[in-house]
Image (cartoon, rainbow, N blue to C red):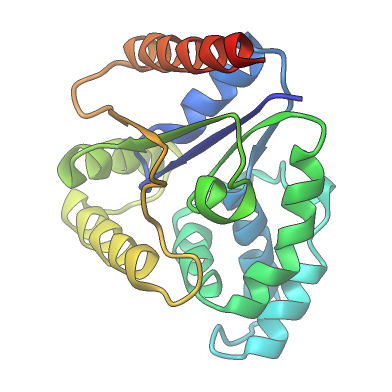
Amino acid sequence: MTVIAIDGTFASGKGTLARRLSVHYELPHLDTGKLYRAAAKIVLDNAGNFDDIEACTKAARDVKADCLDDPVLKSGPVGAAASKIAVHPEVREALLDFQREFAAGGAVMDGRDIGTVICPDADVKLFIDAKPEERAARRHAELTGYGEKITFETVLEQLKERDHRDAYRAEAPLKIATDAHLIDTTNLSIERAFVAAVKVIDAVLAVKTAKH
């Protein structure tokens, strides 16, 4: 029944880390950002307007688990659209039950408001971050790897805009939970970030076990 909440900035490596941790601890994993991407894709497919709260909320309600493996969800346009749809409280409310039900049996959850809103009582909370330039470089490499033609400067600008939207939205803004452990991945390889996270998680779980 262990719940590990992993929040962090865009392209900080939290998704890759969460997948590694889910395997290590034999827990199911949910990338909650994919829920917003899936909802955003529905709006895009319908040529909708992201200022139309009703349409965005309906799209969120239409998201199903089998939609989350669509490769197009990783694309730049869908990623940018996801942060636009996520600003609506009605959209976040529509996706709340899906996330909490997934976590109920124990899980590794990654997103932007897991430790603060979705699973405030999670057993372990991590916050993953890295400098904007490093995150932009990672995202640029990912997008060009998919065949998208985009400059590093454009990616960096979009990333900073997204950071601002995430941090200053009215509903569930991105912030570090008071009991979260910060891991800065700017100068860490995936393996070193994984080792650092396991060290934190094992320590926290050991303390909780000792108390019981």
